[in-house]
Image 1 (cartoon, rainbow, N blue to C red):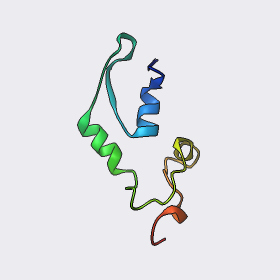
Image 2 (image 1 turned 90 degrees about the horizontal axis):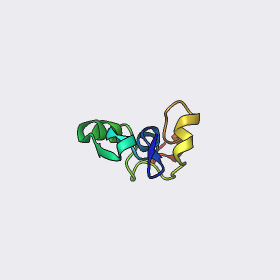
Image 3 (image 1 turned 90 degrees about the vertical axis):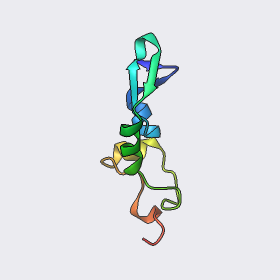
Length: 73
């Protein structure tokens, strides 16, 4: 199920946002604490030089960027 084309899975995978509520009734919000945790596992913009897109993490075991994409690597 998705809301305006965005599923729970895509929200967390692509944007790092944990959705709450009922998607089928279009009553959706987000869990701020869980979203903060999800964001903490992602590189900051200053750390990663390239955005490899949402598929990279899915293909690479949950890693959002390649080691060579990080400043100082």
